[in-house]
Every structure is written in C-alpha cells, then in structure tokens.
Image (cartoon, rainbow, N blue to C red; front, side):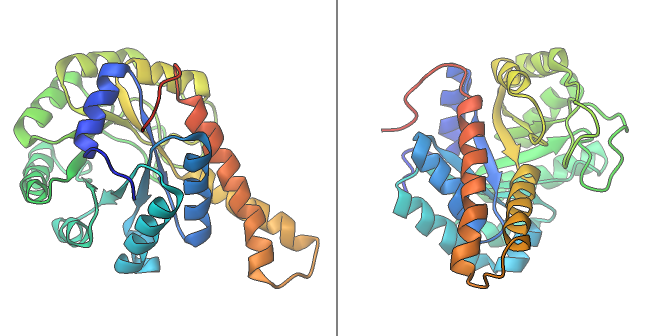
Length: 283
C-alpha cells in the first residue's frame, strides 16, 4: 500500500490546489478490485470506504486485509476510511484494525451532543495519527426524506470545527444518499461561505448522480472529498444480472469479472471527471 502522506496532509495539499479525492465504498472482493483497478489505470489516489454493514458482512480483519493488499498489489496511493461510524466503540475498533481515517456521524443528534461525541473521537484518533470526519446538517440517508431541509449553517460549521478540532466536515448543501428523483440543486453559494469560515476539509456525501460540471464547481468552492457508493452497487448488480439472464454459466470466476469491469469503468470516469486541471497525483 502506497501512502506518502497522512490524509490530513493530503487534504491540505488539495485545498491549496483546488482538487479533491474520490472516496468509494466497497462491498466485496469484486467491487474492491474494480475500484482499485480504476485508480491504478488513471494513476490517481483513492479513499476506500467501509460502512458498519460492510464491516459486519466481510469481517473487520478481512476487510482491512483485502483493502491493504489490493492497494499494495496495484501500487495505488490510498487510505482506508470508516464511513458513517455510529459509535465511539466502532471507531476504536477500526482504528485498532489499521484504518487511516474514521467518520463519526452524530449529525442527527443535537448540536452539543454532536460536538461532544466528535471531540472524543478526535482525541482518540490523535493517538493513531488518523484523520477524523464528522457531519453537520441533514444529508438524507437511504430511506429518509430527501425533501427535508437541514442545510449546514456557515457559523455553525465554524463553531463546530473550532470546538471539536475535526479534520474534515461533511456539509449539507442539497445532496443525498442514494439515487435522486430529479437532478439535485446544490447550494454552492452556501458552500463558498462555509469554506471561507473554516479550514476543515469539506466533504460532499451523495456524489452518485451529480453531474460532472457541478462536482467540479463544488471542488472549486472548497470540496476536498467526494463520496461515491450507490452507483457502484447499482452498476455491479445490473451488469451481473444482465450477464446471468442470458446464459447458464455457474463459474463465478467467469461471471463476476464482467461486473467488476463495469465498476472499473465507472470509477475511472469519476476519477477523471473531478480533475479540474491536469496535475500529477503521486510519484
């Protein structure tokens, strides 16, 4: 695994250059391979994300081992990140297992409770030199209302970062997890205001389904990390279904690669789309 810098240091570089990292969730060996092959092909760094559900499915040591070995094999600069960690205990387990970055998501709790829990995670992560991400505002999760309003207020973001010491902040500016019923309208002016009042790396959740032009504009206004998950699951399963419906092949080694390649194509496209200008990503 090729890591030249901590994720915190990488974010500082990205902020100075108006660039962003793509953060992709993986769910099994095949989706992981598809993501890392894409990063290798276009020579870009990547953040590999695991949710609690994926950790429970794969097993924590197995999930970390797969990610580390895949990054090393393909010589890709990458970081392993806990996505939407819901407890201090889960964060601690992931840090012990070797995660480079963790997210504690207490965004649905009152502001002061969010601050308290996030601050405790920041203190814990310092012992590991790990990056910490939190969330402020309402970003609809799968199954939740997407029309509910709860955008991040710039002054709240400033206060939150100052009180917690968090490295990265997921902001609510109109995106949502899962697919959109119509093209989302991001509040980019709000994003600019948040960027002006805090030096935390800003994160855009719900990157699936947002146009390339909008993603690039969001990067110019301060976004340093863009999450991609739903589109990866969707393209993998749809491709696999189309493959299986037309034949009776039962050899997994013959049917899975088609779906894996579809993930590689998707992630390659996303990695190239978020590059505003051509820069060397890593040496």
